[in-house]
Image (tube, rainbow, N blue to C red; front, side, top):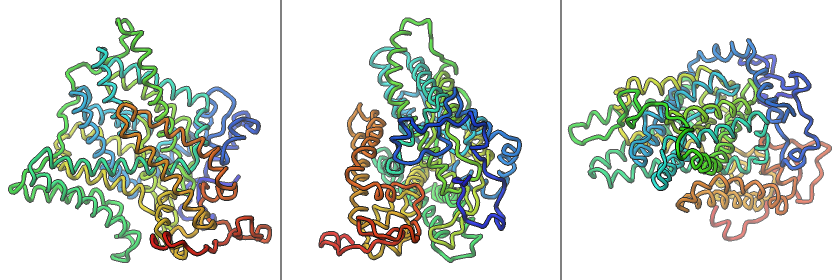
Length: 595
């Protein structure tokens, strides 16, 4: 069977990075694989269904299949022994800095907007507990679980709702968590995750760009609002620290990709540890000027007690007077949250396990959804927020654990240090932040905003994996220069420039629709339904605008240009020769001006 999870970077017999044979999904008992040839999904899926997402036709068949493949003695041994590497340390520190800053920032927002009903303690506790459970009991440990920005918005709106209708906030959160978690468990046991194949790269790239731009705007907004909250000199210094942290991290990120300064080993090390080094330097700078300017720093709780004065466990309060009302209200509130989690969680898993990322141990989805559902059933009963896999952190974590041959363009994957050790380190550090809060309280608030902005930018930098962003760059590039770009091997470059741009403009319109929903007041929480609305656009509208051959090139996961052969050397109806670059027609005046 062809290994779709590992790029052919080095000949098999010469591969010094080979650790173990990737799991063969066909090796599982034949009854575990469901023949979906006549199913609706098989007929309507715009691309081939990955074997890992295929239905089994049995109850919890997908979950059992994943555990049979991943929880073998050799795999479990590899999951822990492979974690002892320098790459694991650097990736864990980077992801801790990236998730800690955003989790603290979101916890502070929740604390302020819910009148201290939820705060940083609950956010850090949730990330630590759910992350450890997911790392140990899911077949897919790579996605990063945490409370995200949309989850924070849901928590705030639920608080406002309880104030309006006069019900207990923690009881309502417990009920909503029960409905959301139960829905995710049902999705997992009935293999419903396979319907995510209706969301192709067309939608993956739009959603990833949307989430990344949210991080960028939140980071910038955090800096700007300081000018209204504190003295001008404090706000300006916070802006300086955010800008320094951002530019330092970006500089060393590109140092490894584009520069010949130092030797390769030093460039790799500086790039891997760029964010922790930037944070450390900003802390040193902040203390060096403490006599000249007052520096606002992170504030963390000093104990394991809840932010609000209450007991930890809250529960559903089944014997209360409002039980029926809460059950019905929470069921309605859980619908958009479940839709969001279905998209957000599976997109995070897909983008963190894409074949071109070079993972060797297979792709897994159903068990990850199961563990996430269980976490959402149990943890909100303790007053904690909801949880799902996070973008852009999940694919960034996989890339941070990867060794690349960066002498080539684009960089070639050599090895991914995939293990359960790296994510465990991230989540354990979250627990330690609650045990030793004074350590993190040295960090200025401006640094948090700088790291938030960097995380968002790193997720949408051109030519780093998001083809939508790559094609936005092409809007301002002359077609004659397409072959000089890092993505010159992409299959869609076989098409005329105006067909590429038309497809890109459709995606830009969809991204604008996502952003437009953020300014619709109480309807903003319905944005997952807008994202779902892009599915019929891809299934039914785009095929009327583009030919099947064009969509295969524009919406493919592989992205590599096909080589020509004697069987496909004839020109097609679009006037292009398969496997060769398209000779673009002259540009109109307006397009020449843009380039």
